[in-house]
Amino acid sequence: MTLSIATIQAIVARHYGLPRSAMLSPRRWRRIARPRMIAMYLAREFTHATLPRIGQQFGGRDHTTILSAIRRVSRTPELFHDLAVLRERLRWEAEIAELGALSGRVYLAAEEQVMWSDPPPKVFKPQKPRPKRQRDYKKEWRRRCERMAMRADLSAYRTDVAIPSAFTDR
Image (tube, rainbow, N blue to C red; front, side, top):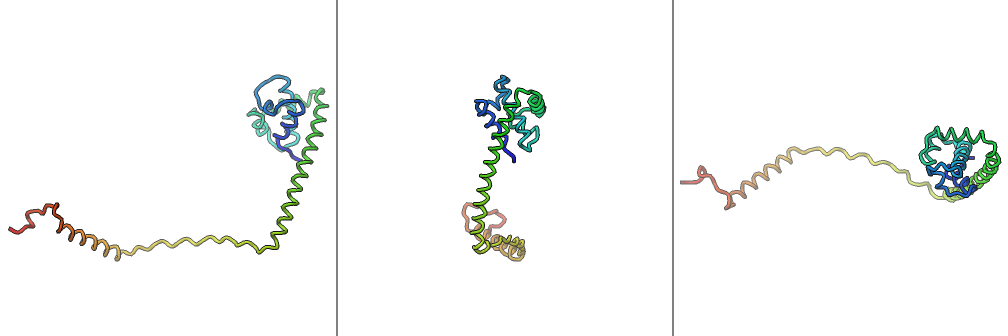
């Protein structure tokens, strides 16, 4: 039976008539600090969260603040009645969440049963890597020679290229 820290904060804030954002605020007013300490205590009791994780959920507080809140709440007898009422509410909330999850699981099981009659899905087979291209050096050399020959032929017809005097007839 686990609840989220946000759910615990919301239930405690609703019990004391505060907005949930008050649990996260840095204010130290008693009317905000006490419910916050109670929520920290209940978060430790009802969740499997670590102290740093609980502190992070309460506005980035240090884990020693959470320890202090747990000790104070457990030593303050005037809060015992509120703790009993809130524990009962949280248990009800956990049961409702469990029933919701159960109905979701039943729905998924029914969907899977329908899917069992379908043919099995195709299994994904990874493609083999393409072999590395082998270079054809003879073909590359032939193409290079052809390009050079074409350039030489074209340069003979160009008028803007000056021909050196060594190659001209006198």
